[in-house]
Image 1: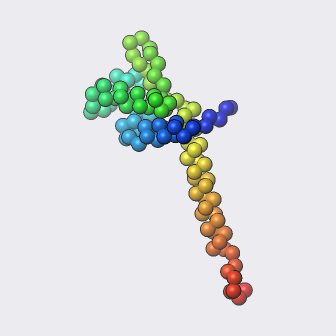
Image 2: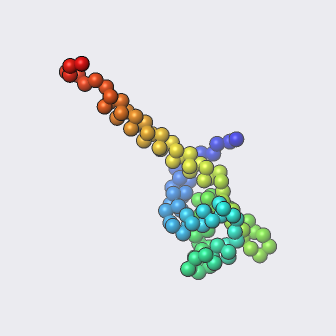
Image 3: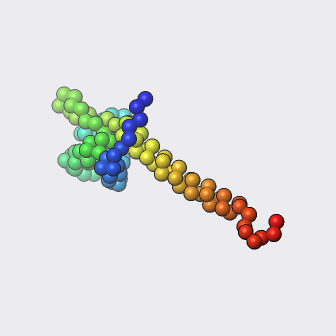
Length: 116
């Protein structure tokens, strides 16, 4: 399996897209099951055009893929980008955990000038 890495511009687009609650919800919905833009729009108290704009932001961030199926646009999650973003967050967590481990080591180390 090829491990895809996000460049800095992609990281910025992904997390900017995910900063909005409606867009996070759209990604969650299409992860569960692909849906047409019109079906997605039925679930929100906003216009079809507004939902289309949210989908376009997600598409530019490569979090979803739109495919024409007859007269409808079917939205699918782009798992490679979602996995790449998850790997980035995992790496950041590893850095944080390494910092905590170093603090634990410092606290466990015998202090100079103390009697043992």
